[in-house]
Amino acid sequence: MAQAAGVSYGTFYTYFESKDDLLHHVVRSVAGEMFASSLAPPDTVEDPYARIVESNRLYLRAWGQASKVLRLADQGGAADEGLRKMVLEIREFYVGRAEKGLRRLQEEGLANPRLNPRLTALALGSMVEQVAHSRDSLDEPFDDEMVLDHLSRLWAAAIGSDLRQGIRSTAEDKGDHWLLNGSKVFISNGILADLVIVVARTTPEGGAHGLSLLVVERGMEGFERGRNLDKIGQKAQDTAELSFNDVRVPKENLLGELNGAFVHLMTNLAQERITIAIAAIAGTEHLLEITTEYVKEREAFGRPPARLQHVRFEIAEMATECAVTRAFLDRCIADHEDGKLDAVHASMAKWWATELQKRVADRCLQLHGGYGYMTEYRVAKALYDGRIQTIYGGTTEIMKEIIGRSLLS
Image (cartoon, rainbow, N blue to C red; front, top):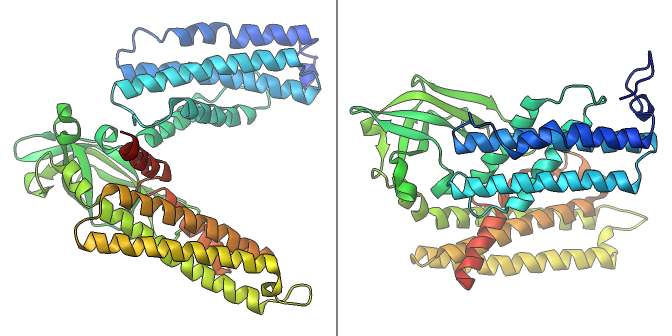
């Protein structure tokens, strides 16, 4: 690789003398040693999960290198169709590697079986491209630890919505106590709570019926709280990471039946989801009231926005959607009081009401104009505080999967 004497690696031409030199470097550095290594993870790595992680580490480094070469070529004006095609082919190969790795995790019961391996692999690639683009020099070491951090977060997200396969915290029966090990992330009130209820695997081979609920108390040795996570909304509520390292949990701190956690959690899942839906429609209706008053009182171009037909149509559409949603939720509440609310209708209510909240918050902010973007206005806070509604309690995608599976199975 050519380098001009005394010149820093700041531009494309300090790397290569010609396009042929560039293409040779791509083949050598990207499709060479790392390419071969990623095809065969080290035999010394026995654990299947660790082998997949190791394989993906090599794949990520290669993908990042290819992405970085293309960016530098773009900056130097030397990125032709041949180079782009080569980099895209390398990218596609490693997308396939990551997809295959995730499918293997699913087969091993270590990842959510509902997750789309292809889309997850592409998401991972997007993360590593960002890491690669933060490096100005091809010779600057690629940050493996940062890549592995992205990888671990992605796997955590992969198992986050699956109770049956995603629980990896374990509690070993030691006679007079349970020995708890594991970690949890995105725990509401994790900083302030004196008691936390932990779902842990008490029977390794039990699958969904090998999970139990354990009550862990503040001050127990080995129970640690991480930082208060910095969220974009709901700042008043703390959200934390919790870790459990050989925590001795007394036998009497078992909550409910041994190996009965899945049943306990599923029993009230419909109630949790309908509660989120009720909060969503209440917040949506309140935001619509605020916006309706705002467009009647504020003046723009010499008259209130409420006098514009487009604004009236926007308000009419949102009011109609709120009314229809409220009617459906009222029926779900009545069914729940009679003990008839099923998982499908609870899922319908949850995903529809929370997605409506998200849409209405965005449209109401637009009707506020520039003021809506200011944090002192309630519409701005509502946009960020309400964004989590489509995620916790089961993501919109999971809700649709439950509904679709019930209709098509």
